[in-house]
Image 1 (cartoon, rainbow over the protein chains, first blue to last red):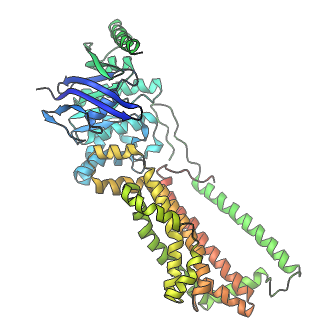
Image 2 (image 1 turned 180 degrees about the vertical axis):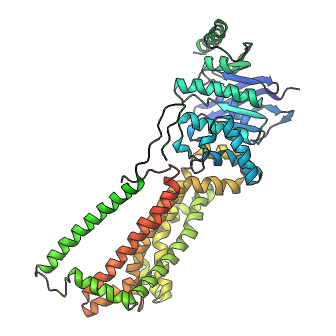
Image 3 (image 1 turned 180 degrees about the horizontal axis):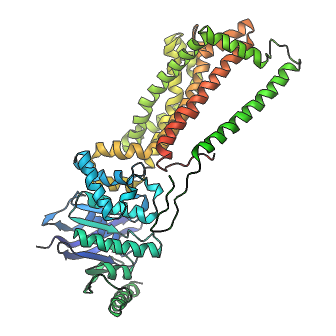
Length: 254
Length: 278
């Protein structure tokens, strides 16, 4: 049984100039421990779809099943990482941020701090456990956010362009780190990005979306062996293919 | 805490010697105060005004010492502080929760916002005669005036603060299973804290100003405002000025120490507001 089923999900917004369809009939399924990237130009509804899966938005049609159960609203079965560094609570230390979900779950202090330290080790930030977010760089803050979303052990990790606001060098580091984290935790991950190279580097499968209205255009499995070399021919071929798929979608819509 | 982040090479802003900065700012404050005092002293000694109207600083300090020594000043200050803290405390108990409720619930906002907008611009002193008729001379009237003066800045700032809480924090906390109760204590209150503290600061300042005025008219026998007003009957300008020094000193202690420390230990430490330049 697939772990996640997105079934014919559509969402329509009411705007002053009439209803606008954000996502139209999006469908895909995911196996446990799969790393899936949603790729598309801005406005293609990929973040909207992620927010629907996260439970922040309610679709106007269709449904989402996690482990066979339809979701309603958000829940601890999903961890979410946003793009904005400001997602961390500035009044809590790195450790305090990571323990938050466990605290909500009612895990005793000693235990939750132990788990949180483990997560910080995973993202290589154990030395900064007692730092406040404003003392951390953007990349470090995003790593804390990843640790925070993993700490309460959700079945699925949802990531909305978490590295888009970072400089290119840091972003490369972060992608490597995330690939390691995924290898170690074997989480099911849905990762939204507009960066094709990032998708090829990280994903088992890429879901290409096109805008106006946001639809799933095609699915491209990435069969490259890991760790992947972004300079290899095969890697560049995948990139080229995806860019082509995207380009068609964009020009058609334009 | 100064940390270089190895991964990115971006240096977090190093904190300069905190004590050195603090010392420098104290020295600056002392310099301007001493300079102003020197000007006053020169004026008092110039003989332009009668010494009874413009006593020299040593005369004032002598009076201050005497009033401290016989305990009267301590009693006056205690009464005033009692009224301020009572009224201010009441204002926090009403202002903070109401501000939060207004920001969180549209219906509460719809009901209270017009009321707040109408009542806020009314100076608390304009209510003094009315309160005197209702409650007579004494603590009740002065405390209520203080309460009225400080509630609105606290309420208004809290309301703004809660509305400016980053929606991402609420989303993240919700996704991690925070219920309404936890959201309130663990996210909204700390998230709005820079505004809430600003509201408390402004509220306290207003209380402190209001209590002195209220005591002049509505207190009997005790209080810094009362003692100043009473001293005019005896032409005791030294008593007036000694009391003014105490008023300024207590206000300064609260502003600089109580609220300053509160801010440093919370919102400044969290990087939610910047420290004043040293």
